[in-house]
Image (cartoon, rainbow, N blue to C red):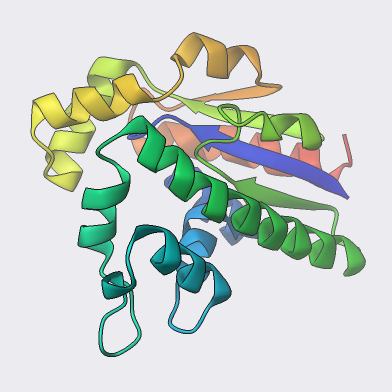
Length: 199
């Protein structure tokens, strides 16, 4: 099975490409979704996060007070590192388990949709690295228009990620998403055909 790492900077349209690949019939393992699932009520990861950052983060119904965790975990680099040390191994383990399941089903390819794929060096464990690339100014415009971020926040989030040049250098395939969504279809279709042919 071909393990495909799919990534792109914030606002690049990576999730759109992931949806299109899912529509082509490929299993997509979504790291962001897994990140939410491992923090569900009663999970060992949530318990560990509460021990590290405060038991009061767990609300009466057992769910996580995400806003308060963000306030405590993302204000300093040290706090962010402490949270990542708990969550990243759990996300990675569950992601690999799902990819292994797809391989056991004898699928031709499966897609690991992971924003920090190159940042964390996880692309090295993939057979093919696909980067969705969009110019930073276009990403700022889309983040403001579609997610309601203000321009300064959008720019700050882009600046916190690794440089586009570094991400693109790790790519086996670059999908150009600077144009309208209609231009994505043929690129994703070409990738899907390549994966089905086992190359």
